[in-house]
Amino acid sequence: MYEELTKILKESKRIAFFGGAGVSTESNIPDFRSEAGLYNAQQKYGMSPERMLSHSFFVQDTQTFFDYYKNNLIYQDAQPNQAHLALAKLEEMGKLNGIATQNIDGLHQKAGSKAVYELHGSVLRNYCMHCGEFYDLDYIMDPDNCDGYIPKCKKCGGIVKPDVVLYEESLDEDQINGAVNAIRNADTLIIGGTSLVVYPAAGFVNYFRGDKLVLINKSETAFDGRADLVINDAIGKVLGEAVAAL
Image: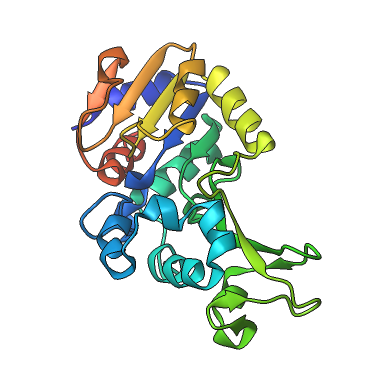
């Protein structure tokens, strides 16, 4: 069904992948703006997700921030889907040289991918704001380690903050550089599961100078006219079938 994509993958030697929330929806993690996503949860709090996930709100009302964060951004039982597994297979085959993701769920690594640039951080990493001690996700989700919803450092008692990029915060320079280099040096760029409206991350695709641009998304994007191949379907299904045919 996806012969043209399979042909592109066969002929490519340096593939880069740029993905968004749609990559993880098939792992039952809601899209940010879907009916079941973060916007649907705002009725309980009376303010937008952008406000609640901002640095200033984290500082102003840390308790409510963590209430919202833990109940709407954490999916501990989520498993990699066909998209994650297909990309890990491409890397294993030596064809894929980097994944730039806007997701914070760590599923690419769980699938086996190693060259992953997490532009918005990861819920799996958490650090004490006072002493820098590292904590995993299980630690901050354990009520015994928290004051209410707020996780506290067992060494110094400081607040443990997730290593995710909040609104008003800057992206990590190392992650930016890794993503840009992967995209710039690719002969094929696959963009998947993203409407390409979240900046600055979406602007990274402008660094692509390669041969083939592929867009896989359920809905249209502003970049469709620039692509060599556009597939409007579920990305797990598309990549799973295309990579299996290699």
